[in-house]
Image (cartoon, rainbow, N blue to C red):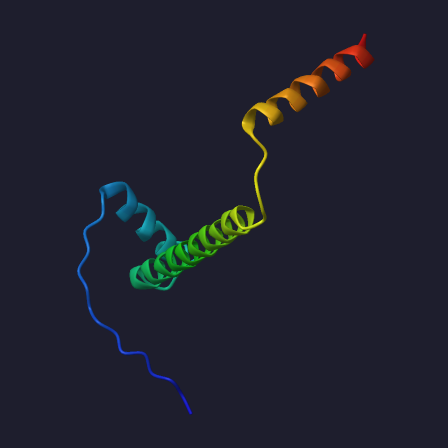
Length: 94
């Protein structure tokens, strides 16, 4: 059983440089038509958008996990620890 994809004809405008690049890809045999190039580009854009959405969701999940993990450490304490580590590191280096 084959799946048919309904297509819709669109007219697009491209800057001259991109139009030449598209024609060059077709002329070189890399793609069979201008439409094939545009479809490939749109698929890549879809993949990019999906990846961006997944990364954002993962980041939101990490933030939520962090917020729900218990009380935080006051910034002053964190900076004091960092300064102490820096002093110890400099001491070792000397």
